[in-house]
Length: 90
Image (cartoon, rainbow, N blue to C red; front, top):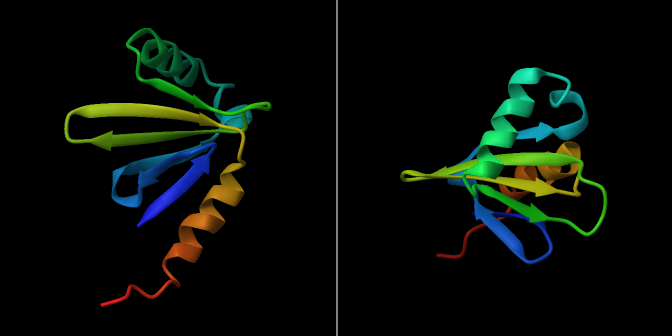
């Protein structure tokens, strides 16, 4: 299954390591350093037209990507949880 992060970006649910509230987590110096390092390495993808509300950390094989989204973590979590209720056609 895939999770829609905004714009035209979708990621495989199995690749998601975590969904984080940008406002609350960037209080920590460690998180700010992590995001700055990811930006410097070209691992950050902005998926927004509005104010950022969340970041989604993904890992696929050896490639790490941090998506910055305007969608709140609560909404992303609801989308993720509702995907489990979908029936896969056989």
